[in-house]
Image (cartoon, rainbow, N blue to C red; front, side, top):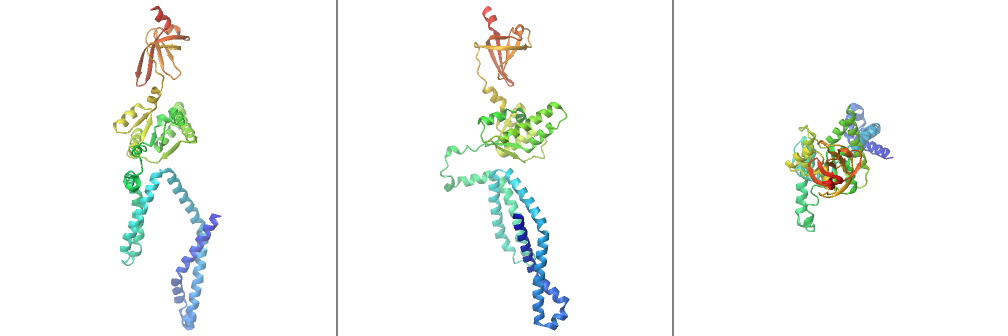
Length: 373
């Protein structure tokens, strides 16, 4: 239905455009049959005008009707393209771009009137100036959006009722996800539990790296890449999670970790990762990091020397006579003298706890040995 309405509108506009050319067509008809019209006098010129009106309207409507499907097709394609771009942009960018466009067009309108008296080009320069200044207004406003909104917020009639303690509430509202943390998968459960707020940003170069890993010839890498894509699909379907695909790419930077740091600086965002090296590089460049491994270590139960626990010894340790067991959360327990208890569930007494960058290690002895000592 809408296509039919658009076709009718285009046909009508084409007819109007044809009527605007009536004067030129009338002169053409008069020059072609000038002898006949001269002999007919005023009546002949009137006939020429009527014929030119009818001819212009019919030709304009016919051309509009025939070309309407072509214009409608490209109009819808352009509309879908604009809609897709706007959906990917943060609301602050859209708002800043609209304000910048309005300011640019206002300035262009003021400047354009000064060029109207210029012959020939004077009627075209305002349109060119409007396009240039409108484009510049959009780009500059988006790049300076933080400063612009801060300026608006500092105005007394806008920011006077805003509590001072909420000034930092919007800081780091974006959380940029690293490839490793997506493949790890724990981020989905953490987000579901509600411990991470704000918008989760997935850079397009991270998606490309995931797709490259998923298409790898190596079976292990391929499974890891597909797991990461499945995790993202699961997170997008979770109610309450705000996930945004960021199209920003840094062509002059080849490393994904460096791109993540630059994107974190641009968005004033935190980077979520479990990569130790990325963690250190980001902190050196002033980008806050949320490390999943550090969170995992922080929520593990505290174990103090002298506590008793029951563990299942699964293998021998590096040192002579040692056995190794694991807690449910993956914490490794080194049992001195536990090699002879491999495959058994025994009670142990904690002797010391060692916290390392890789995690927490617990050293213990079987309670029977402790009593014998």
